[in-house]
Image (tube, rainbow, N blue to C red; front, side, top):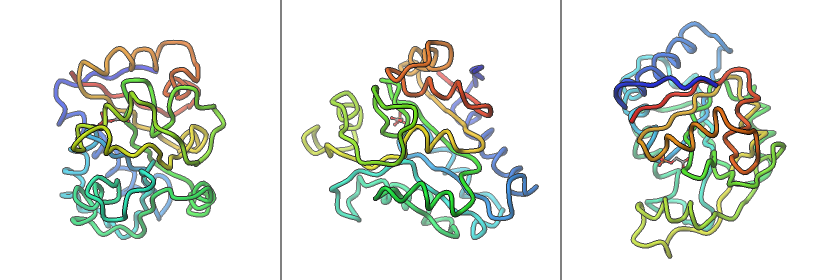
Amino acid sequence: MNIDIYNSYDNMCKKVVEDIRYAINFNMFSEYFTLGLATGSTPLSIYKYIRDENWEANKVTTFNLDEYSDLPYNHPQSYEHFMEENLFMYKQFRYSYFPENERYDDLIKNKGGIDIQILGIGTNGHIAFNEPGSSRDSLTRKVELTENTRKDNSRFFDSIDDVPTHAWTMGIESIMRAKQIYLLASGKHKKEILEKACHGEITSDVPASFLQEHNNVEVLYCD
Ligand code: PGA
């Protein structure tokens, strides 16, 4: 997988938004487009730019990659709340779903599969909450978060003790079924793991490395 290097975070995000616009306007996939969404700091400007897009959001269905379990629905750190604040309060999509049980992959399939999936990468190589050790054929399931991930995410909570210990996540196989994937990383602290994921051994120790087996992945990086 080639890594496309961008000179700014905003330009990197604009590129993804342009591609999504093109895919929707030219019905590249289907009339009812399906967009896979990620949370975290990496896609924030993607959502900022999508807010200004003119395409009809009511023809687009969204699927989020993951969601903490055991957080109340309207908890400020739930991923549903994150999406509401950053995108959904500005754009009314046809349907928006979050994983909360093992039927999620069937739901995605029934909606025609994910056309474009936006993806970040954790400093330990995770994609969604597929932590190191996750198997290539994993589907949507409830997982225990590693200390590394809870520590990374504690910046959004008062303390690490407040970070949930479990989450629902799409599996590696669920993600690999997307027709097109954009893997984004922003910041020098992500460079080493991104290199490993793109050019290193394909191994469950670095879950993002499985993306090397997908035939339609774009990798975008900025310092
Ligand atoms: P980040 O998280 O976008 O907040 O860096 C990415 C991830 O952990 O998948």
